[in-house]
Image (cartoon, rainbow over all chains, first blue to last red; front, side, top):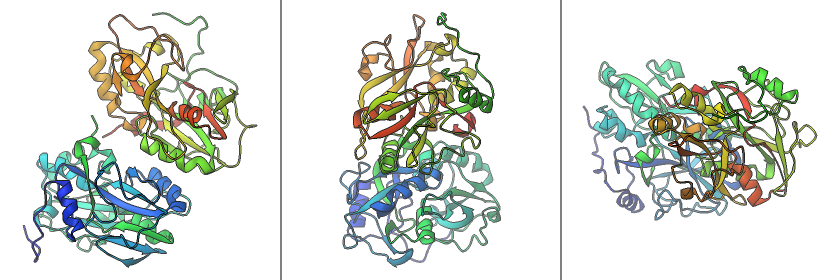
Length: 267
Length: 267
C-alpha cells in the first residue's frame, strides 16, 4: 500500500459537516467521505438543453442514473434540503462550447437563471456495501481519487447530445470478485453491476496507468480490473456535443447527499 | 375459481404474432400473453410536453419507469423494431384537454408529427417470475384484466403535470407473499416491489370490488391484497393536468415488446 505525497484531509463522517467543509474551500476527492450516504455527480445545462440531457440519461441508464432534476435556476434539491448546489461541492468545472474554462471551488458567479441541474448516481455510493462485504478499495487505502477512463463504447445519442461512456475502475482480488459484482448489481440507481472485467482493451482503454480523470491506483499482482459505468459520462458528452454552457462537478469531487446508501439498494 | 361470461381468446405465445393479432383488430387484455416478454404502457404527448412528461417519470419512478422514448413523430422503438406503435396495441385511448374522446383499435388517423411516445414498464412483466415462484395469479386464472385503482397518494409534480398514483392489485395467499415481494423487487424497471399490502384504506381505496380500471377479481378468503405502482399513472396525470392532446393504451391492453423479462431483472 502506498500513499500520495500530500496526505489528504481526514474524511468527515456527517454529510452536512462535509458540505460545510467544502463550502469553506475544502477541495478533497470525496471517496470515503460520509460513508453510508449517497454521493452524486452534477451536470447543469441551460433549460433548452434539459430535455435532451434527461433523454440522454434515460437512454444510457448505466452511466447516467438520474437521482434528481431541479427546476430551472434552483440550486436546491430534496436529496439534501439544506444544501446549496452552487457552493457545497469540493470543486466544479465550467464549460463553454465544450471547452473547460474554469475549475472554481464555487459557482455563485457563474450561475444562471436558466440552469437545470441533474444529480446522477455515483459508484462511491456502493463502496460502503463493497467494504462491508470485505472487498478492499485500493484507491481509498491509497488516499487517491478513483481512476476513470473514456472508453471506445459510444452512448446512445439523444438529439444534439452524444459521446463515449466513461468508466471508473477498481482493482479487485479474484476471491472478492463475486461479492463486488453482487453488491453493486443490487444498486442499479448508482450504476449497478460492472460493465466489464479484465482486459482494458475490451473497452478500448490503452493504459490503466494513465487514467483520463482521477489518479492512477496501484493494484496487487493478482487483482482483476473491474469497470463500472461512471457519472462523468455527461462531461464527456459536453466535450463531444459542445452545448453553449454547462457546469459540472470536478471528477471524483462529488455532491454529498443526505440520502442513505440503502435507499438505492434493491429489496 | 370463476370465469367471465365471455371466454377470452387464447393468449398467443410469440410477441410478434400477438402484435399481428392486435393489428388485425384483436382487443384482448394482454395479461398472460407472450409470457417471458416485457409488456409496456404507452403515453404519447406533443413535443412541447415531452420534457415535463419525462421529468414526471423521473420524479415518480415506481409508477413510471421509462423503458424507451421515441423521437417526435416516430412510431417505432428498439424494444420491438418491427412494431408500429399506432396499430399494434389491442386498444388505445385518445385524450383532448384531459377528456377521453375515443377508444379506437388503432390510432393511424389520430397520429401527429409532434407526438413523443413514452413506453413505460408494466407489472405484467414480472408476472412470469411470480408464476415461476409458485405465486397464483388470480386475474389470469379467472381470464380477467388486472384490477387497477386511483389512490389518494399524489405523485411528485413536474411543471404542468401532476396527478395521483394508480396501482394494480393482486390477491396473494399469505404463504406466497414473501416470494411475490422478492421477485417483483428484483425488477425495479417494471415497478419493482409493492407500494402497499393489506388494508386498501392505506391508499385511500374504498372498495376493492369496484376498480377504477380493469376488472374486479375474486380473491380467496385468506388472500392479502398486494398493490403495485401502475403505468396507468400517466393517464391519471393526463386527466388531472389536461394537456391539449395525448394518446395512451387502454388499461390492461399493453404494448408487447421483443425484450425478455429477464433483461429487467437485477443481477
